[in-house]
Amino acid sequence: MPVDWYFSRLHNGHKISRVLLVSDLPLDSLEITRYFRDMPYWLGVKIVPFDQFKPNPDYESVVKGVRVYKINQCDAVVAIGGGSAMDVAKCIKMFATLDENKNYLEQEIIPNDIPFLAVPTTAGTGSEATRFAIVYYQGIKHSITDESCIPDAVVMDPNVLKTLPDYQRKATMLDALCHAIESYWAVASTEESRGYSAEAIKLIFDNVFGYLANNPKQNEQMLRAANLAGKAINITRTTAPHAMGYNLTSVYGTAHGHAVALCMKQIFPLTIDRAFVSCNDPRGADYLEGVLREMAKLMGCQTAAAASKKFSEFVDGLELEKPQFTEGDFEKFTNVVNPDRLANHPVKIDASEINDIYRQILA
Ligand SMILES: [Fe+2]
Image (cartoon, rainbow, N blue to C red; front, side, top):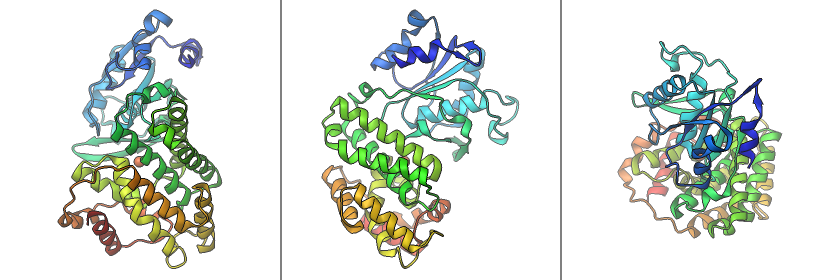
């Protein structure tokens, strides 16, 4: 077990002795959580479980986690779970060495060397590979960005996907696929980021049917794909489908990856049509056209239009239940779309077009 190696080695001259285990999963629910539960017997490492947080974690739960970390004199953090467990663990790691008498969100992050291991339990967010952590303070979303919150080790255990519910399995995979596509065409893309995205896109399409059938080999490949897509957005961030998808999740409760894919279905063809009309990338329209063509090849298609069609049919083929949308909601969506994400989109999209895209999704 690679976890044994991680805990038996010295970290900055010290052996880990007390671990804060951040997870909202029962400790007897998975093979990996049982492994940590029994760790005192295997390795003599004390485990301090912390599960006092909810999805979209708030600042108070993070403060509580920092207190538990300090009171128990922990010297390492482990996160097991999806995006929320990762966000909480990242914040605890970053805040543990800051001044506890001041608001952590108002302090500058000082990188620390607290060992931090992550075990993602979905093949989707890629959060275990990113420098971003989200926390809600007084109901407002705060995004903290710091390299020091990237886990120094990741365990990809395909067994965690064995019992994943069907909707979550499909929606998280769509999240990873949209990360890879958006990062590939992002204005902020680099050669390195495109390398990660390209590998992720290929892995997803090569393994999706086995993954949907819950085959262990393909589950493992999908975890790898989601991690690579996470590495890609760690460099580039996301683009318009993510900027727009958040509204569908907050208003209708549509799973994040499903919501983003519904937006991608509309935005993919629009992006192709606009490549020469309103290119946003300083590298130019010819460059963007080349990127779209390369991406089509990665998806096994001859043209960008065929890739867009393939994406749309792929999402429809998953037969996800369409949320009960109300067309009247679209106006309030437009006001909160993150302009930074739109600036990172390879073609310009203005407010009236956002309205049109939402109308098409809600129709
Ligand atoms: Fe996402």
